[in-house]
Length: 418
Ligand code: UD1
Image 1 (spheres, protein in one colour):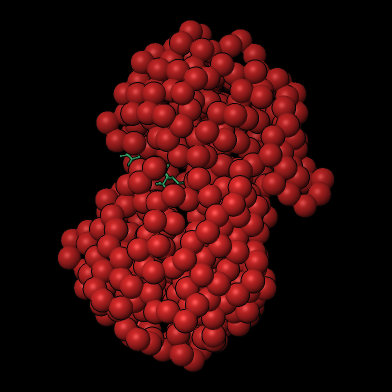
Image 2: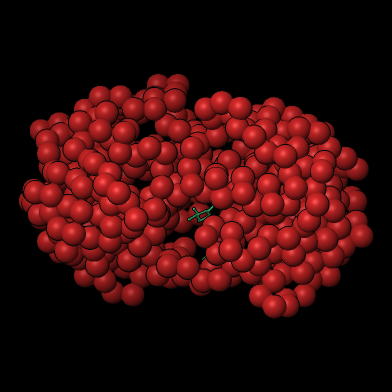
């Protein structure tokens, strides 16, 4: 199992490019199951979750290839099975995204029921509720969701909780359904818009993606398409926090500043000078200690839960006391215990962390517990005195493309050891 050895050092500086967005690439790869023809993607990040999705599609008989860096092709015409096995679903919950497309295109699907995970229970009841409303018959048997439908029918579906992959699953299913589907209280994340744009390029009829109401007019067939995946706002946001926590100056390029509004506001409140251009963001915290910030996580356009851990790391070094409230997942403070090992002062009360900033933290052995928690540990280690060893970095490899190279390029001393 790989580890990271991180030696805390001075301010980070320089330029780094955002990779393609994991959370856009995964649903879009699954959308290849909907079409007659080939899907050609660019800006696909080189991540473990993408490799898992590729395996998932390949074992169904989808012809998948990566003809060059960032490129990906998929052709599902030779599909042989509509099963997503436990071995793959247990390593990546986003495997549930094959359910809607398989059901809509092939009329049946068997997807291993994702269990709970490190950050909470994470049910998929809303995905199933929506598919049932569209006429699917669904049974849970032997740990599998077994779903059938002759042709899905358009329906009006209201989500009582905003769900990102739930919205995506139903958006894909509705694209091939008979009639009109209206998704109410839909997720508004930029990744939903990217999926909708790709589906539109495949011939889908979609209005309102990026708002709380999405209207999809089902079509009989979808065709091959080419699409470039949007930049990863969470990866990019992580590099911007790295600039702030190390009191450095970093320019993030190949990004979309509009997708990062909530994060940039918090960086400004922490005292960073933030400037933006069409496709770049610069964060300058040189010579200043960050000020504590308060935040609570919300569905987009609120502050993203996927950036909560990184800002907790920032608050650990900030001047003052910050409160961080997690409202999306019930158990997403696993990083707090590890940050304490570096000497942080964090008190957890229910879904709120109260963080008293310290002038310095010191390196220690810590363990990554989930994807974004591991990112927080990397950030805290970069600013700590001495050496931090981070165990179980496979969590970070799921969602960050070559993070040690990218942070190394900014001056961080980070080394992968096998
Ligand atoms: C997606 C993202 C993940 C991000 C999360 C919240 C992907 C691949 N992953 O995860 O990085 O942290 O959005 O922004 O895009 N819920 C239900 N029933 C359901 C579905 C969800 O109660 O059927 C609840 C969840 O338990 C959670 C909340 O809804 O409390 C939001 O979860 P959801 O948006 O579905 O997260 P994911 O789509 O799994």
